[in-house]
Image (cartoon, rainbow, N blue to C red; front, side):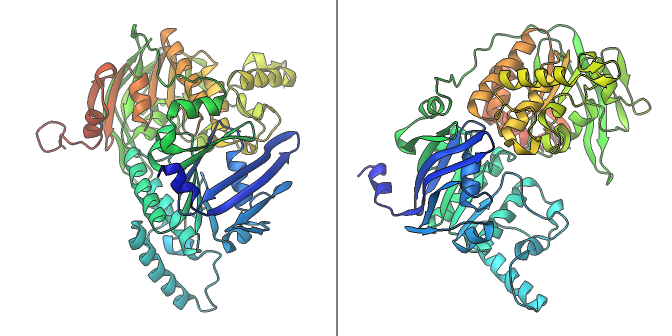
Length: 521
């Protein structure tokens, strides 16, 4: 019997019938129907703005549908709030975690859950249940750890444990691997398989087709708010899914010519960065980036890449070292100014788009000029030239396929991938001489990834010096001419892009040479 027949025999855990949703002029969901078999892992893919997250937020009660029906185990239910969804056994782990960073893991677990009027016994029961769930599903965590002190992977485990503690039988995950390293992703997938083995139904929203092929049983494709296909994963492939998502054939490889490096555009010597707690995050780092080349920095997240980019962009002071760029010498005594660096031709796509790249409450047109608001093209004597800015924003939205293409929409109203497109458009369209780019395609759909990758290569070929930080090894290997690997704040190796492979980079990322006399500390 085929896998399709096996899945067809399973009863649906959830059914969405004719779900329709509008936000003003935006038709986010267009009569969408979907059935997910009980005890399976079901993927939902589509471009940014295709309606995936809206559909799942309706199932979770965060939004209410304008029309349509939700059924759980064959029974129609009203889901008017997340509390209704939780009572029906449905919970959701959002792309941006819903945790209180100053609370412990245990305190986050019981937040909003009724446990009786006596706090200590309730916390005791919660602790025992947390440890039981963590052991059963391989979600090891310290109940007394403060969430704000935890890396991204453990925070995600807290979100999953919180959903299981509240009785979730249907678990929705929205872009769960967008901020995870490859090792953390592998661990998450082991957890999802354990959930499936115990009868939990998992719905996975992701733009990463390799992950869809690896972890899901079935997959649905959305495009422009409509459901366009349902497939058994074992009976499809990445190329077919990409074509369904975008509506055209999408090449999954890059046509990359050999680089022709020119003069040194960015030189770093003996750079160290220390955080507010006195911990050295970047430790005596030196390298050069030449005009017309892409230098990639690979490494497990948290090994100093973020602090390095921030220091080079003039956002983070450094106690030691020197940075040379466009006639400017940055030292501890003379740190760079982000505004001055921009005027000299340095552009920066930060890793944390919400923290450093956009202001969520601002409309798109304001974020598109953020940091460049003094540009003469945007000013009319004293006041800003609003019509010119709106026209510029509309042009960028069209070129980078930002959805919805509404310059007046508050930026927090866009999906994470479309927020990223706004930042990418703002920085790449300035024709910089040096581009610092962190996680350029985080949360971005496959069509936009293709466009961003081609744009980065075109900038390189036009003479731009690009420093690329990414936790996606596939991306680093596809784009970089030279790859530097960081471990615990130091550069522990360099590999030519044309000869790099995941095994070599993975060993360097884990500092596997430690103890053999090469790279040990």
